[in-house]
Length: 178
Ligand SMILES: [Mg+2]
Image (cartoon, rainbow, N blue to C red; front, top):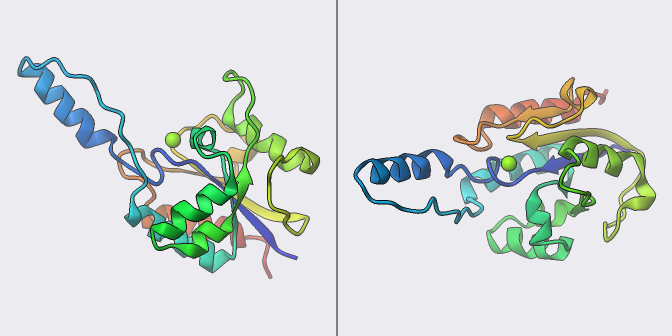
């Protein structure tokens, strides 16, 4: 069985608001308007469409490794969210989230914990074991050296998930296939 996992970050992957938001904020402040830097990021369809491309081609499952898992801890919520955006294949691919540790624990370590301890995957939908391939999509780089050498596609937070990122992710997920 070829079980493949995408560990999915959200901010900087499925949205890319930082650049223009910061640009406006900077301009307004230089003009003398003291404004707060709003944090109203949301998931953008154009990036979910790209994720859909990977999911369908690789037949991959998704584990949410983003801090968004605190807002939406249940895979059913992700199923509804992506399905309501018009991407039921992406919604159906979500099996759960990584386990929350203390804030000091790096994301790469949380992901490794999920991979290493199948018994500690609360609320996750069952998947056929073993996992044959995985890829981490994230704009931050706090992954383990092992993850960085061949399981990691780092997105540019100003650009979000690009087509090039998608091709790299698919290649990683298909690496061990005949
Ligand atoms: Mg991020």
